[in-house]
Every structure is written in structure tokens, then in C-alpha cells.
Image (cartoon, rainbow, N blue to C red; front, side):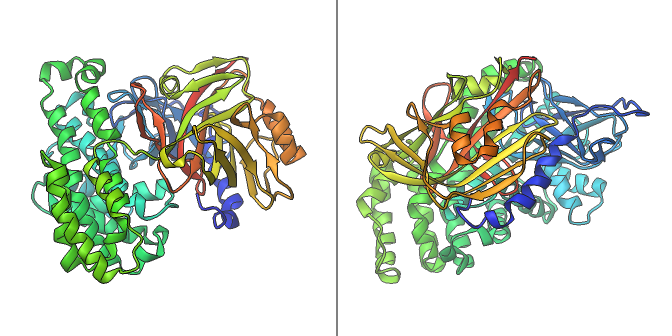
Length: 569
């Protein structure tokens, strides 16, 4: 989330995007039932939002929406027999991890529609003018899935298709992880779809069956993704994109290959008997390995530490960077990395004599690449009605929403670790509250935080001059953008609070946000912060992992936590 630039267009963009969630799936007079269903799959996505882009609700004039059930299935709304479909959010049942990306399926006349990473590849070709059937055949040929009807075949009934589906998603996530350190304001949905488009093009340009670990394939996808989102990269990387692309490929590809190989081998080694037993058996057999691969921060950490070197002349640096990655993956990285890192330092001394790189710190970070970051901000929990919900409870809520009498008193609990302790930090932040038919997005471009030497949050202030934007489709809420005329303290009981008292200090018209008309509805609450350093959540093992990134709106995105709540009538 850009601290200032995104505000020039926030309100107009966000109102349009918020209204996407207004369809609600309810029928109107004269509606015709449609006997058609779909399924959203990375693994089956439970509790995901489904948007039928080409089917408008007769009352609201906005796209119809639905929610997937516990196995990823959803029904088409009345009067909607064919539509491009977008799916986002929810819980991946096979990994038991939240899903924060977007998947798309093209318009289809099939009675069952699949929305998956592979159908997203097909849609990317359709958007380039390719016929949908020709695009599906091309992707099937490149993935070695000839004869499989990719738009309707259920990956949970076909193990080869499931393996390819999961590995495509993992490759997209790994490529994003390798590029993310080069820009701190890359819109998540744009980033995801740019990566899918690049991978789709790379696959379609080859006539033979490709391994998703193929070096040329990954290099082409990395390069094209960088080119597509270059306006969001830091200036030093935009100015010499060719060198950055070559060096990043050399550095990241061995790490990406190692990561997706772990996913592919785990799923390929799953016995056909276990696969046939269904989602729960698959989860039990593969969850630990798949979660470890998805939560791995090695690629992100290595690129973060060596990002400065990516602008070196590629004809000299690329080989050294590749050797560093190979050494990181070796049996004895502490011995093998040092000599290659010394070569890199020699190049930095020649071409970047004013570099501020800390050799000892970077070397230590490279040797410990598989380990987690030492310095980070922790999103500890979301609090509602004085009740705290940590990451594991929030993950479970995506499938089984938490019961609440009402939704108010929302706050976010943060801690800092390592070098972030005792620091003053400035972040931007966002909050989204949405049902299938209602949505509200609140964005703040400046939030000043102070942590004591134990990492405890001691100060949270919206400073004078901070800009706030509110967009909602609720009739009781006025869309607002304003600049604060004074500092406002938002720290209560050690947490960043958004209750009635705090909201009324910001602006009187915001006080009503503490009592939104949501009785009887299932509500998704997502809070994000944006900061250049690592932002983490804790997983079910109480271990730190990089927090998933969420796009709350076309202009609001960041690392965050999300949960679902069932509000009493």
C-alpha cells in the first residue's frame, strides 16, 4: 500500500471494487433456476468468495456472488448459465492454510465448472484473444495432460491433474516471493495475474511437454512478470531491468526449483489409495510437507539480502549468484557459501563502491536462509468484543465461522522482534469487513508505531496529515476521504483499536462503524499493514511464517490476518 500515491485514486477505485460484492446471490422476480455447479480448487477452497463477472444482479446491477462450501463447491445463481468466474480467499483444505490469491475460470457451457490455477492459465490466454478451447488444449499439451478436459475435470478425482494444479500454484507463489523484495507497493491481484499470464505465455510458447521445474520456463516467467509489473519496482531495479532479470533468475531459480520439487514429489508419492480416500486423507498424508514448502521464506530471504547485487553486470554476477544459491542448498552451506560470497563482494566493491552492504550480517543470513527472519513485526491476533483470536483460530474460522453477538471493538495486536525492538516505525494499514452482499474498506496511509525493548507496542498514533479513506456499499455508511488535522492516539490496552471512541475522534461520521447492520450474517474481517520489513503471523505449530498478503481493494493491500464471524440475528 503506497503511503501517499494511492490516495489520488483510492476513493473512485474502491467504490467500484467494493460494489463487486453486492450481488448477494439472491433471486429476483422472474428468475430462472440454473442447474449448474462449480468447484474452486488449489486444494478444495472452503469459504471462498465466488464472483460471477458476467451475471448481474437484477436489483443491485452488480455481479452475482456466492460462497464455496466445505469442499469447494458452489452453485450458479439464477439466470446465470455461463460466466467468467473469479474466486478469492477461503481455506485450502489440503494444506489447511488460508488462500489469499485469486483464481479465474473462463466462460464455459459445461454443467460443472472448475476454477483452479490451471483454468487461470487458460483465462490468461483467452484475455490475449485465444479461443478458449484452443487455449485449454495448448495448456494441456504443455503440462502433459492431453485428453483431459481442463475446464471441467475435477483435480480431486484425477491425481495427475491434482499434482499439476498444486505445483502451478506453488510456482506462481514462489515467483512472487522472489520478486516481492524489489518493490514494496505491488498490488497483490495485479501481481498474481501478471505472474499467471507470464507462466501461461511461457507454457504456450513451447510445443513439448514441460516440467514445471524447467529452468527456461521459470526464467521466462520471471522475466515477463518483472516486465509486466516494473512500474511498481524500486527505481534502481527499473533502470536496468535486463540485468536485474538475469541476475534474479540466476539467484532465485535453484531455490524455486528446490521448493516446487518438494511439493511435486510429496504429491506424486501419495498412494492412489490414499488419494482416492479424499481430502481428509490427502491432508493427513501431505500437510506437513506442503505447509513447510508454502511457508518457506528461503527465496524471499535470500533475494532480500542480495537485492542490491541484482543491478551488477549480469555477465559477471549471474554465475556467482547461482553458485551462492547452490551453496545454500548444499549439505554444508556455512563452508560452501563463503568463497562465492567473497567473489560477489569483490564485484560490489568494483561496481558499487558506495554500497552499504553489511558483509557479516548478509553472510550470516544466507547461511541461515532456511531459518526464519530474526527481525520482524508479528501480527499476533485480531481482537473482537474483548476476545482475542490468534492465527490458528482465524484459520479454522474460514471453514467454521466464530459465533459473535455483534461485531464491534475490533483491534489488532502487534509485537516486534530482533532489531525491530525499541524502534519507531511508520506503516500504512487497512481493514476490510465484508459479507457476500456488503462491504466496507478503511485505509490509512500513515500509522506511527513505537515498540519498547521487549517488543511490546507502546505507542500507536495517526499523525496530523495522515490520509484516511472509507468506501462502502452500506446505505448507513458515507464514503469518505479526509486528512487528519491533529494527532490521534489509537492505542488501547496495548493494541491498535478501531472502536467507537477511536473512530469518533477521527471523524464523527465514523462512529457508526462500530455498530454496522450485520445481524444474522457471516462476516469476513481482514486487517493488513504494509511495511518494507518482514511482517509475520504464527502458524498452527506456533512458529513464525511470513504473513499472507491480502488485496482488500484495488488500491489497498498488505500483509495481514483474516477470519470469519457469524453474527447473531
